[in-house]
Structure formats: structure tokens, C-alpha cells
Length: 401
Image 1 (cartoon, one colour):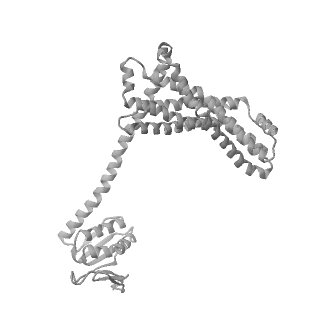
Image 2: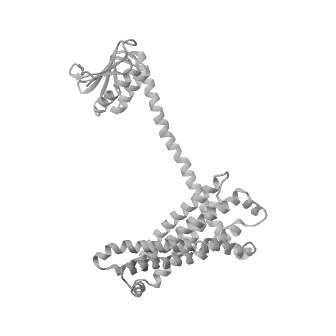
Image 3: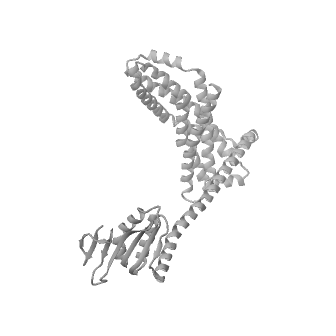
């Protein structure tokens, strides 16, 4: 151990000092202020470790003894700990904090020896003060779970109620044809499908290009680059085509649905429709659901064809003629692969559009409500699509499709 001396304000010396057989650490404050030295000496007493403190345990002494005291206490875990305070002439809040921190480092409460009544009371108050924040934090964590659970139940109940209202609106749609305007359906279809086609084609081409190139590199070692056509075609038809089209629909269209309906909700236009006897589900939700389901096959087919074109470009660069690539795709895929992908795409579209409309109708008040609804629509749509795709994969596997 070392002795640390502070003379005046800056000079530091490190002579070695020992107390008995155990090393001692001393913190000597300015002679003009105290004239005493704060020391700590770890000693063995029977089967426990005793930390013998002496001098003034004030801010200066406690600060310099902090590291060696905590190091000695943490090294004695599993054994009883004793604080010998008979040589302490003064102990303020800083010194009591040092002792309690040493107890925390040791992992158990230490026995006090030689402490007067005032010193013991001060240490007890510091113990309580340091334990209360931890207990309050644990209690707040437990209490925080209750609002989360209530929010989850409310969201689930809102989703179930939305599904019920949508089912009722679909059943009663023939009696409410005056509320279903074709201009709303085709306008939404143009926004969600036609204007999204350039993005879908670009993404599909790049996905096919990247997937083919990354697959061709390891397959070239075995002379099987031509089978890249099989891999890309099956992957696009069965999984990637519907999934990526649904992700685009969620990011581009579901957020727009949530923002449009959410803005109407904030401006109380939805309440105005109900006041006039018009069903918001029929006028706002059904046109968007129909438009999304209508354009989703087109988006999926466009993405798959663009991906095949990107794959053909890569195989052309590897020296394979286009006729060989087309023959390989025809031999590897079936109409069942293509139809299964389109079926999944329709389900994805219905789920994504429903989530977007639901988030819009659930928009709260305030300037941030519409943005929160749009964000939750995108996240919810993508998560629901991936979960539903996993469910379809399991069902198709069990059915042998």
C-alpha cells in the first residue's frame, strides 16, 4: 500500500507505510486545516476481515481512501466484514458514504466497532438514503408494467373491434352502395399501385441481380451456375415476390392510409360522417381495402418479372444464353408456386391495408398523433407480414405445397 499526502494544494508524495502486518493507506490533509491523517488498514481478525479506520473521515480523507477501501472490501466477499472506527476522530456524510459504499462492494452489511452513537446514527441514515432510490426504482419498474399491459390489452381490443366492424361493413356493403364511390377505389388504386410500379420494378431488378450474383459466386466452384435460375425463380415466386411487395405496400401505402384517415380524425371529419348517418368504415376503410387487394397482384407480378430480368442479366454475363435461362426457370417452377405466391400477396395486402386504416382511426389528439399513427402503421404492417409469411410457410410445408 502507499501513503498519499496532499501538501498545500498540488504536491503529492507516495511513501510506503504499514500498520502492523497489513498495509495502510493514509490521506493527509493540509496541516493548517486539520493536522491529522486519515488511514485505512485491512487486518485479519479470526475468520473475518477488519478495516481499521483512523483520523478524519471527511471529504478529503474519504475521497483518497475510496479506492483502497472498496478494493479491500470487495476482495473479502464471502467473509464477515468489520469496520473498526475507534481511531476515527471525525466522520461526516462523506465518510459515512465511504463506509456504506464499502459495504455495497462487499455485498453485506458490516459490523461497526468503536463507533460512537452519533457516528452510528449517521451511518444508518446514509444506509437508508442509498437504499431508498434502489427500492423506489424497483417499485417504479413493477408499476411500469401495469400501463404496458393495459396498453397491450387496449390495442388487442381495438384490433378485434376493428375486425368486427370491417366484417359488418363488408356484409352490409350491398345495402350501402351509395357510400362506396368508385372514384375513391380507383383513385386509391392509382396511388397505391400505378404510381408505386417504378419503385417495385427497380427494387425487383436489384433484388434479382444481387441474389443471382451472390448465389453464382459459390455455385461457380461446382460448375452449377445455371442452377442460379432455379434458386432465384423459386425464391421470387414463393417468398420474396409477395413479401417484398407487401413491405413496399406497408411503407408507402399503409402509412398514407394512416396519415389520411388520422388527419380526418384529428379534424373531426370522421365524427362528422357519423353525425350525418354515414358509416366511416364503408366510406373510408372499404375503398382502401379493395384498392390494396386489387393492386397487390400487379405489384407482385411486376416485382417477380423484374427480378427474373435481373437474374438473367447476371447469367448472361456468366456466358449463359437467354434460352437456357428461360428453360431452366420453366423446369424449376410450377403454376402452384406462382399461384401460392399470389394468394399470399392478397392476404398480405388485406392485412397491411387493414392495419393502416386501423391506425388512422385510432389516431389521438395533438400535433404528433398523425406521425405516430403513420409510423405504427408501417411497423405493424411489416411485422404482421413477416409473421403471416412464417405461418404460411408452416402451413404450406404441412400440406406439402
